[in-house]
Length: 480
Image (cartoon, rainbow, N blue to C red):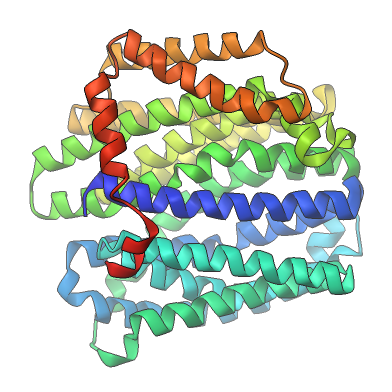
């Protein structure tokens, strides 16, 4: 399957994940109110960070090793299953024991039981992601997308049922774990790993996993550190506003995360075959797709942010608008950071990714503790945005020095100017409340027209893209 096809399927899957997750957060924000919603978001941010060990560790290694040697795929998956079960049980036990300490850090004893219910998800989510990683390594992106969509929908349905029936935060977190368990069962039925139980030396998997884990711990701190500092200094209400802004700011990152997930097996396979022309072409295309799609997306979110906030979260959350205007650029930068570090990891350089990530998150922490007490929640957004883009610039230099290709400067300039002009035109129109529903797509249409006018996008190319993407439909998810 090609880069375009794989990216289409995975971007579609992550878009549905975002839509369902967005629906969940909108519902929770409206039902719970800023203070309880802030607590809801805080618990999920802690859970999200702890689950790095099981979601981004072994699954990432499985993607790389299966892509490099498909014949050993079943053996690699079985070896990873055994390791994952041990890690999940151990992490679950440690997390349960650490719950009172975490609650004490945030001066909120009510967090203890909430955290313990939330940590049930640790037992199942990593196993589910091993199966999706296996599909990714085989470049079965359509099946991977199908699994991600099923899990995304089921977890949200279960969590809404929990809040509707009980109005209780603990049951919401239990429902989240049930969604992960159900997704894992569906994955088992799809893959049937018990039919081919081969042996594989797990030491290679463990070595790569441990090398890359530091990188993932640091990468995911960009999602959480600013929120934690805001919560520590400013309390639940401010953190509620920050969670609302953060959920919307992360849209560009999660929508285009499918691109990085497609790039990893493509680059790994090219390097394994010593096909540098294929690797360079993949890097060029991936960088171009991300730039041409993510930049205007971020611009329109920034322009339409007051209307988006009031329409989605109600006027009660309007203080989140100023946070969103800054943080959306940090999360967009993180999409680029993830792309270039993924290329480095595929090139067996997870240590370099880890060092850059560690340095960037260190800058983020120092800026947060300095700016948040002085600027409020916007200080956290500014800290994250500055540190992310510093790390991204470093990874761009490293990748360019290694492979000699990134993005044509003229293309980058045309894209940036077209996005800026489209955003400026959109500011001349009313973007309050429900009006963002037509301003947002209108701005993107203006952007596409400007790309055509500047010569960056040929009308013939645009027609070809449309005709090709018509071929990629959900029926093919079941056929492939």
